[in-house]
Image 1 (cartoon, rainbow, N blue to C red):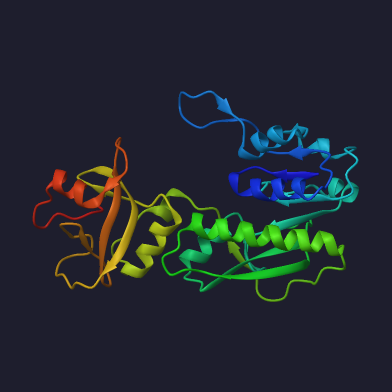
Image 2 (tube, rainbow, N blue to C red):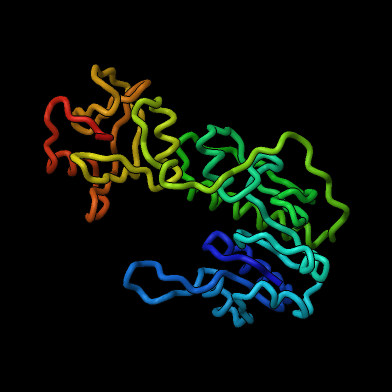
Length: 284
């Protein structure tokens, strides 16, 4: 049995199927509207399961009686009730080095914190949030300019290999987690707003997790890519000089932005159209 929902959970499902494991049921999140006027669409895991000819359910209660000896959980997004765990033991592929970054957004929080090393664990599922013992773990270095999507992709690859190895060897007793837990709370809009009083390094980390935004001339401007600039500029944080922005510590160069109600574009093309005047600031 397999529980997962987003695109990050698809490679592991495919690898288990290709390795010959019998997957009696796939449980995933319900169909959702991806746009305001669009029809509901299936989750990436549901689409993959249907391609593979696997039975799919949106109801977690369907775990009971499905006949599975083990459940594999990858980014399912819900806690598993105790009664279901009593019926089917489960393992979880979690994208952090537990107990650091328990919770919903371990990859994003690792980048925001400036972690040099991330990782993935195969852990036993318990009622608590990512509290189970660990069967195996693998460390993955974080690239200095790596985005959350890029890092997550590498963690999925490493984690899938790790999981297949654990299953092939058989589940021994897991090792209890050791250390002070750190929680990876879900990323919200406030986390993604660029506070130009922060350092260029901190701001670049926010951009790397995806969806960073600021305000320009009263309208939202998304910032998709930046790089540190070896230029010293005078001015208040947020001051815009061409495609350069003054921060609370250093200067950032805008590389790709997205004005409100428009598509993504190169920052130099946006600057050419916007024609910022001296003294204009982002964030106001």
